[in-house]
Amino acid sequence: MEIVSIEKKTFEMMLASFNALSEKVAALRRKSDGGRLERWLTGEEVCGQLRISPRTLQSLRDRRLIGYSQINRRFYYRPEEVRRLIPLIGTIYPDGK
Image (cartoon, rainbow, N blue to C red; front, side):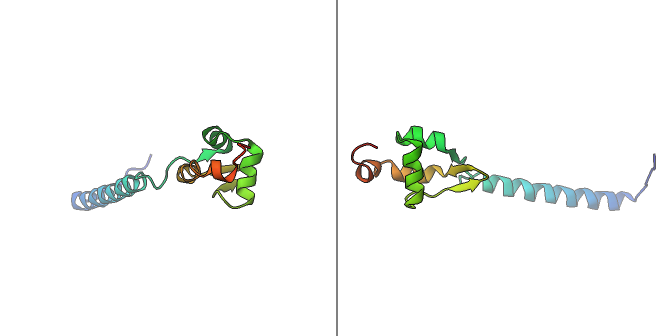
């Protein structure tokens, strides 16, 4: 084991720098938790909320009526996109399909 000794003043400066960095990271984390990084919904959750089939959800994607992100073969949807579509589903698909 190697022991390194430094002056007390140098140690206190390093500690102050570390604490400042820690505060900046905490502030950024609080800022990002403000709703911008909401949990994205899976296709199954969207189908359940909108009461539609997976094929209808695919059709909404194809017609660009709902925004999504794709990671590998899975699609994810923002909750605000789903909320925006709730009142429109009856007009887009009047037969309930």
